[in-house]
Image 1: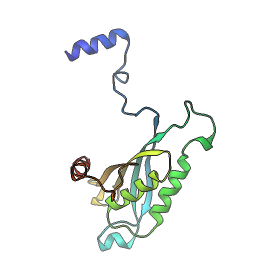
Image 2: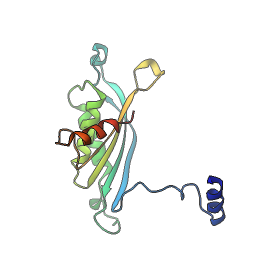
Image 3: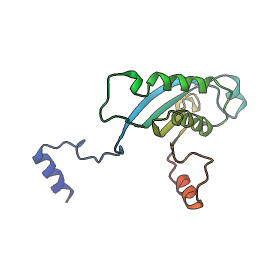
Image 4: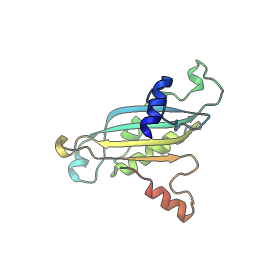
Length: 165
């Protein structure tokens, strides 16, 4: 059956990218900032407290588009520079023990921008395990559901089971 569908798409000239269903909700656009590598004071072990280590941060934000079409005015959009400056401020802040907490701080910074509806944050520690592995986490937060908000138990369970590592 899949071959029949693919054959029909090829006959119409559809590409593989065309056949994907968009995951971007109506009225929003995706803004991403990827492969941001900066020094950070992070970790629970003494050797991690002695010196900063590099972390890689990836952001994927769903941003509300206030008008039907984009203008060519930087004041009408969320600035990449503002996001990068916010990341640098967080990373230069006090020592953070866990990547989970660092990702949470970053998600909250992103959601502080009024037009950001959701933030997917990925944080990886690059300098441990001697290059054999890169540990990290990925989380997603939405404007209507921030950690610490009161959610029914069934919703809290769904949020916990939806974490992807």
